[in-house]
Length: 196
Image (cartoon, rainbow, N blue to C red; front, side, top):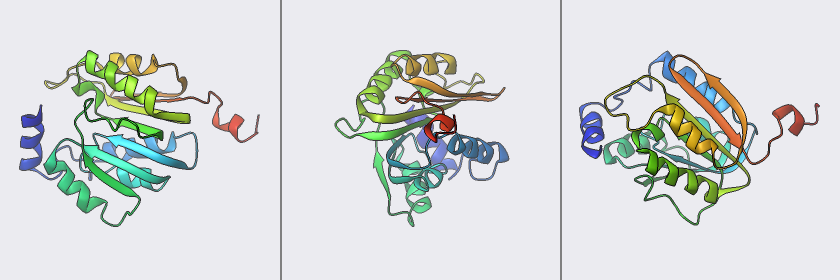
C-alpha cells in the first residue's frame, strides 16, 4: 500500500483532486457541518493526505494532530497548514502508530478505513474507544464504490467502528459515500442546546 500512495503523490501533489473537485469540497463541508458541537479541544485526523480537510477542522478545534504515512502527502500538508499554529503534523501508519496515551474529543477517519483489512479496522476501532474523552465524537466518511486497493467494504468499516458502543448521531448516505458520526453523548444538537 505504501508503494501505491508513494507513486500517487510522486506523480501529482493532489492525486484525488481534493482541492478542485466540487464533490470533494462539498463532502468536506458536509463533514464539518455534521459535527455536533461548535468547538472541540483536541482532534486526531489520521490519513490526512494533503490536509485539505485539516483547515476546516482547525477552524473548529483548539488543536489538531493530522497524520499520514506518506512523506509525499505530508510535504503538501505542511504547506497547506503552515499558517495554522494549532495544527501538528506527524507520520503515522495505522493502526500501529496510533498515538496511544493521547486523548481526543474528536477523531476523524476520512477515506482511510477501507484501505485496512477488517482485523486492522477492529484495532483502529479499539484505539478510538480508548482515546476518546468522555465527550468524544468519532467521524467516519468513506467512498462506497469498489476499487482495486479496497481492503474492507465501507459498510463493514462503519459497522466495526459503530460496535465500540458510541451513540449514532448522524448518518448521511449517498450513492458515492457514507458519512457517520457517533458520540459518547447521545443527545441531539437541539437537546444539547436546550431547544427540546
